[in-house]
Length: 457
Image (cartoon, rainbow, N blue to C red; front, side, top):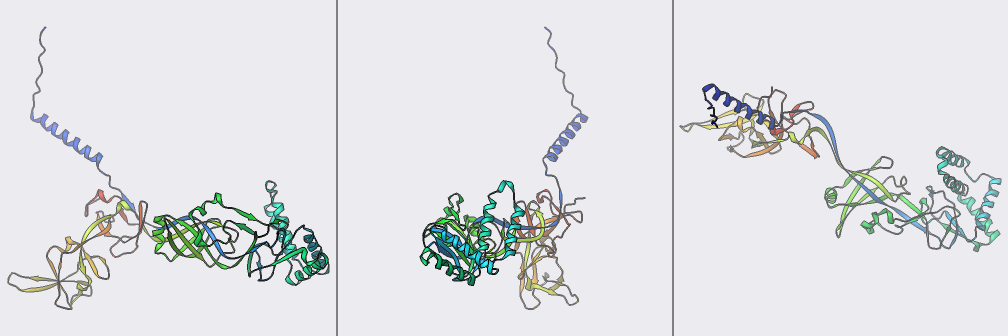
């Protein structure tokens, strides 16, 4: 078989140039595809609020009233209404006969003169009609008890008359009258936190599956020693919240916080105190208002606002750092023929002659102690002369400042910023800072995609 001859590639200058150009283009395409794209961001105003959500346990300044004997209870104060100290709170009888006798005496007083509030009765019926549903027929029983409590809610003078009449008819031993231990708002329930203080709360108390509560109404049978009424004495109350270690640190230095009650969007101010007990952390929110609004609630869902910041919103990716000269404010001065502040630059010639020249360097940031200058503008080995003394200062100390690259002028102009707070991917910065940025300015979205003073368009 005849052997096939290989064709030789004849290289010439044109082919070499083509190969070089091809490789160059290929490298640039790869670099372009792998390079981060330059994008700009329009600065807007926004507000960031640091909020923590909790389910807290409410404690009030309460006096508890217990059943002095087993039997049937009749309340003479409507739940949620105020009762005076030593006012008639409820009666107890063993077989309901006394309760019926009380009702008869009330009817007798009614025939002689008004002792009940017809307008309040009508309001109760109107409220019931507004929420009535065939699917919630049990509400009828709530209406029954409400009306019964209103009818029996006599003034104290009428109550004394009724009690005396019933004692004469049934005997003073047939029932017991219990008076209110304090002046305040009356509610009728007993739960797992009777006689418990905020300081005694444990982490397990926040498990609502273990919570037990008993509500009482007129005609209910109760046992001796049971808590059947509680009187909330004032508007001072406390909510205990469970904290993580991080939340404990966040609240540790706070004295006051804003609280939003989730169920009705009500907002209130509360003083705050935090404590560590063993390995657990707790917060204690103290209020001086709205105790009556939530008087029947033991567990409350709340949002606690730690801080609220309003300013300019920028992405965290836009933030860059740049080093500036740090110069004491005391070296700022005004020249003889200038009203503007500047710096007196001291120079020494080769033959030892000293001259002082006033220069107005751009101040990028100023605090009570220092000014910050651009090293590129100032240069190296610059000595400043104080105009008030013989002191001099060699400009060499630097400090990094955070800022963004503003693109308003078509190039990357570094502008220092004052960060108020950071949250997620954005920061809120102070508005109208000296040589900073303002609303609707354009900044580079990703500071790593550009260099300072680089032209953009």
